[in-house]
Image 1 (cartoon, rainbow, N blue to C red):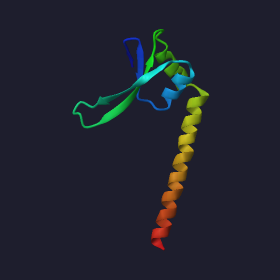
Image 2 (image 1 turned 120 degrees about the horizontal axis):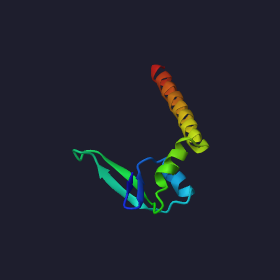
Image 3 (image 1 turned 90 degrees about the horizontal axis):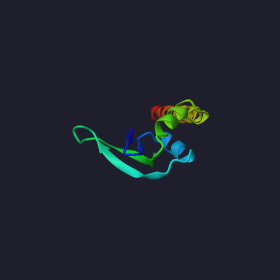
Image 4 (image 1 turned 90 degrees about the vertical axis):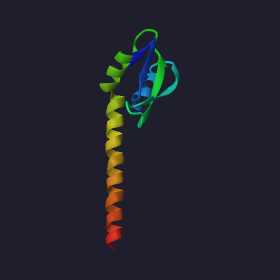
Length: 92
C-alpha cells in the first residue's frame, strides 16, 4: 500500500526484504478491521521513488520468497511431528 511517499505492508516476510533492498524503515502502525475487533501491524517504509510495489513484486518472484515458503513448509512438518508424538503419548 502506498500513501504519502510511504510504502506500508503487513507482510512480515516482505518487510525485511524491503529493508535489505535499501528502503528506510520509519516505523509501524496498528490498523483495525471494520468492526475494530482485529488489529494488525503494518510496517512503514519511506518510498520517495515509488519503488515499494516493484520491490514487493520482485520479492514474490525471488529466491528469498521461495526460501521463506520452503522454511514454513518444514516448520509445519516439525509441528505435525510434534502433534503426532503427543497423540501417541496420550494413547499410551
